[in-house]
Image (cartoon, rainbow over all chains, first blue to last red; front, side):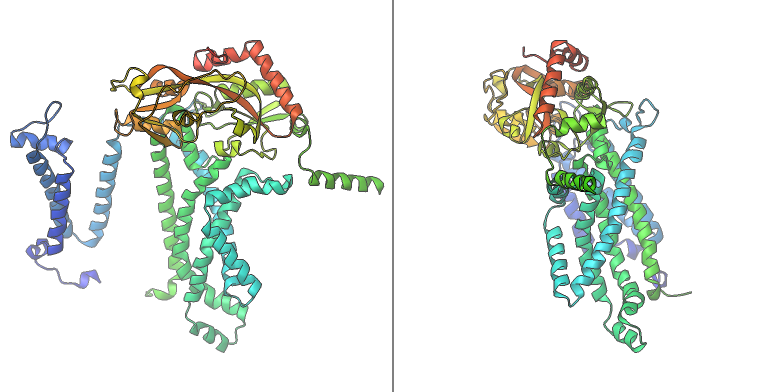
Length: 340
Length: 273
């Protein structure tokens, strides 16, 4: 569709809009206020103005302004050049630019990232150990929990939509309690509170964690599932009735597949949130990703470095799930895409 | 039939009475395994060594206790908060985790034996001009929240274990910044002298370990106080406590603890200087 718009002349396309001028002006003002003359970019500009930076020199307002304007100008030129490109080139280029900016930011820290690849005696690097010990635990705890959470959520959503007073009350109490209290406290209640009923309830750390995550996320997902089911047009019920389908079959074949279209995106969202929230089960001694990163980091006083490594792994996992989610969405969205 | 009933009655009785005297000792001897809890985020007490195994002073002490009990040894790694919450439900039998035996904590856990003493020291950034404890008055000091160092700076430190050396409050912080754990304060000090904090207050061995790992810090003056650190057990098994006290007492006497302290800290911390 984008291709249908006739290309405008180049001059017209690089002319900035009024909004753009205002945004760039604000950016320049911000950069000047940040006093960036002492940075590497300031150091590059200083000789051009006949000044110098470095130890013992105090950069003045003039140099701060020039540096700020130079950075803002460079960004603007970048913006104009990007605008001339078609959509499919803009996306990867902007991704790469933002990624490079972020990597530059992180590598400017006074930190030793060599620790990621330092090997232990059996030859595994810290990064690999972080994946084989931490990420694996995080993944399987999250997967099992999201599966249980979906079952709980479906039950709670149906109970809330039913005419049965008991089911409605139990469902609303459940969602209210588990959404309204912190997950960490739920972990404590299950791990430390349940054994008070008797030693046979002293669950191990991983089952306790899975139970807590399932209950908590089941409560959030219940509302998502309810919204999905309510989102299906009421006419669909009538249509199913007209075809002579009973209530069970109507739900399974007509309502549920259409509700899934609304349910999948926010559920994917919750799953990604759970990946990271599962770090709370580490209080019980589960070596998931965050905890493993901290333990390795504490050994060499490199916690920050290892947490950045963990962040990269979390992000990579999230990207994988975004892709899986996109596939599931395509499946349930079949009725809404053009065929052929 | 009668025996079946008796077995059933016994089973019901066991369910009904979750704790009884001697439970921990019975479990340890029956399973032939002593499980210790330890938070492996505190080198050199407890950490992951470069063979990716748990190691450290606390771990060695735990191993030695298991050896003297004649049982195998295992480690669980729950968070500090879970350990000091008590009510361990038999998930682990003992904590050799450098816990300070305060009176409040003794209501939740038993502290059968003190195994060493940690000096608490102040440290500043290497660029700092501070050279004595007096100069720290009025400075911004960072430490762990809710720990004994925090209590000292609030002038509210009560360590009522026997054999605790007396101390004085020598430093009044201008502003106290507390963190989840003391090494977070080190990270803030590392940003530069006075950027977020002027000084940190922590265990001397931890500070020395950080300096060894390239943190730009230096220790100021003599230790402000020495805190006794104890082995902890769950409430309700005096026989087990007596056994642990006896074993740790022997380890003090025959020089085992001294040797372990010198191995991990380079000095003997098992007696008060």
